[in-house]
Image (cartoon, rainbow, N blue to C red; front, side, top):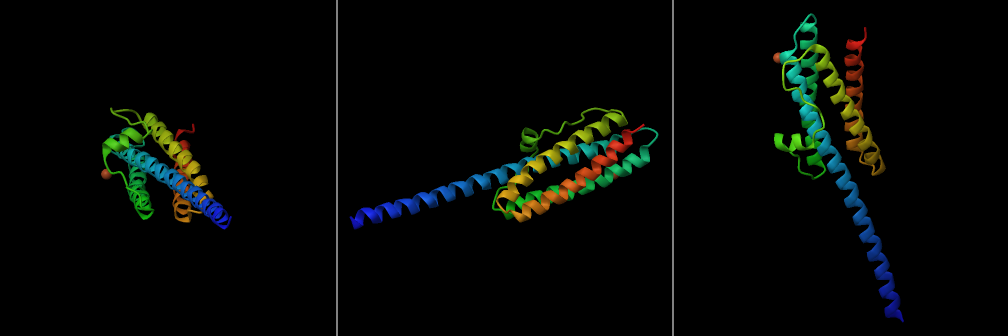
Length: 172
Ligand SMILES: [Fe+2]
């Protein structure tokens, strides 16, 4: 009888631990996949913004050239911060164009185009990132991953401010 009780107690503890480990693994995978997607999309947005900086033409050339430089400079720092957050959590940080292009949903520009098309492409890219970050922020809050919450919160603010500025360029 004692043996049976001991086995039941052990089984319950083992079941509890197994459930806990599985839940932690799922949380960890969600954060890892989310940050990896955000890294890929941020890197492609960085290149898109650099493309716009190089190829912008027209009446507002100097203003847009400088504005896009400010944006890609920030994104260069951001990709480093996101990749290093992955490493700090013990995950692999993808670092190849093939991996980024497979994951990224940011639409690239592959030929000379006008200012409005560039600005709309940047609005779409920044909007996509804000949405990805907002979604992952909720998951990070749920598991008390304060470092990821902090990183995502500050990045969301940057992209929201950028969207305000980009959208303002299109106001007649
Ligand atoms: Fe430049």
